[in-house]
Every structure is written in structure tokens, then in C-alpha cells.
Image 1 (cartoon, rainbow, N blue to C red):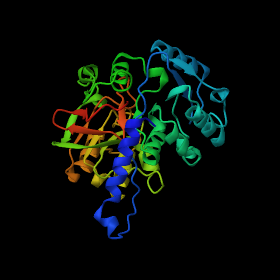
Image 2 (spheres, one colour; image 1 turned 45 degrees about the horizontal axis):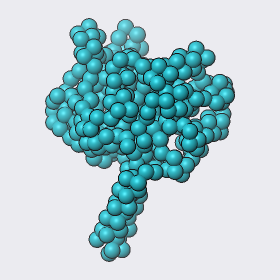
Image 3 (cartoon, rainbow, N blue to C red; image 1 turned 180 degrees about the vertical axis):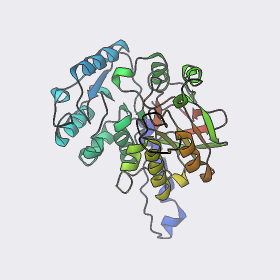
Image 4 (cartoon, rainbow, N blue to C red; image 1 turned 90 degrees about the horizontal axis):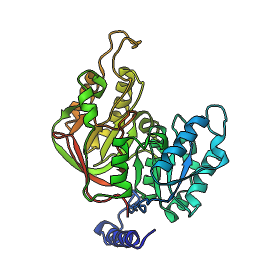
Length: 352
């Protein structure tokens, strides 16, 4: 942990211990976690590639290696990444060990997932969170990796990153935001959706962009894949949404399933406490000829029906998720969200 992060933690703890409630002996049930920023990535850094969920093909691995090299980094992976155990890339213990080894290795300056699928929730209890505190570094992924990047932030305070996996990070829009946030960070950076997505939205409802509830909000960014967000409810890794800007995306879920998951988040009491709600691209989730449910609502009807009554600033259609254009955003960093202009502005740099 760098000196600046240590100083911030010390100041934060002093403020907590000075709180009148503590002096009066009141019971404090929530744990205070200091925000820790990883070091920014630099050209020539070694980047650890891991497959912490489903197994990946040799072709996908080699594409990941090639794209990481194109960005000026040195890709590093272990033999465990070649593993197959049913639909996983290894047993829970093997996948967790591979991830923990990358965290522990001081030569590895960042970890970028090589794939998603399913499996990250199964290793949350096996992750060495104390080791992460001792060796904070960039950790980035999305989809099933949502579980890990949010759990790590909750347990350690480390700012993690929801962003492209290794084999898609090189694409113009994706690379631009990755570099502007993690490599050559811009202070108070403004994240805007892809102009390409906006142009295509005229002929593609999935890429449509609209304000659900107007307004502005500020708070820490959390979230990612809707299915994974729901899967952590009721566990020690449940995402705290109070006062947060909750980012949501998913893929290939029929409208009724999106309805069910949003209803679950609302019923849990979490989503109702959010400061803002931002939907990315939910590809394959709208009503279509392939929809099996009779008389189905459209995706927009479901989202507006569930979200509008919350009266929380909210939008649909920002360029993140299972989409060609997938911007990077930091989990655990404060930002301003403008539902009218559909922009997110980071309060500060996400890396040191």
C-alpha cells in the first residue's frame, strides 16, 4: 500500500474513532474500509491472465496474449489457465490458487481476466483478501467477474475495474477508456457512451439510449452483471447499494427474467437505497421472434415499470457490458452521474 493510501486510511480511522457514537459506547455494526487505489499500469508491466470461471479455448488464450502485447504489456499466465474441470477451468481450489498466486507475485502489476462464463462466486471464500491488501494492484474484468471485482472492493477497499477482458481490450473505444482511466489517468474524467452505438441505435433497439428518470446523483460506482449482482444477495459479498451509483447489464435474458431479477433487488431493499441507476447494453434481452414467453413485455417496458417508481435518477443504454464497445469504470470510486446528459464523471483519478 503506498504512503498516500496509508495516510488516508489513518485519517479515516481517526475520524471514525472520534465519532460521538463510539465515545458514547453505541454499537457500530458496519465495518469501515479505507479506499485503496492501485498503482497505474505502465508500458512494459507484466499483466497476469487468469480464467477464474469457465474454461477458455487455446484460441481465446492466444488472442488475449496478443492483444495484451499490442497494448505494450507483457502477458503472464500459468499452466492452470489450460485446465478443464467440467465447465470450469479447474477445480475451485485450482482457480482460486491461480488468482491468489497472481496477487502474491510482486512482478505482476495487474490482473486482467481472460474470460467469464460461470464460476467466480464459487471461489469468493477462497480468495486471499489479506494478500490483496498487502499487494494492491489493478484487477479488471466483467460479466461473471462481477462477483470478484465487487467482493474484493467490499472486503479490502481496493478500487477494482469493470472493463473488457483481455481479448477485447484493444478495440478503439475500449482501449481509449482503459488508458484514460488506468494507464494515463485523466483527473475528473468524463465517461460518455460510444458515438457508434448511438448511430446504430436507430436500427437496433438494444442500443437505444434513454433517460428513465431525470436528475443527477453522486456516489461510489458498484455493480456490473445483473445475474451476478442477484446471486450475491444474502451472502457476505452482497453489494451495498446505499448511496451508490449502481451499474447494471446482462446478456441473453428474456424480459421476464430481467423483471424477476430487478424485482428481487427492489424487494431486498438494496436498489431502493441507490443514489443512481445506470443500465448498460443488455444484448439479447429484448422481446424478439426468439422470445418463448407469450405476450411478453419489451425490455424497455420492464425496466421502466420496475425503475421509474423508485424515483431515482436512471438511464438505459450506456456503452458497457456484453457489447463491442465496453468502457472501463472503477468499482468503489466516487463519481457524478447525470441522467439528463447520460454521463459519468469520476471525482478523481482511479489509480496512483
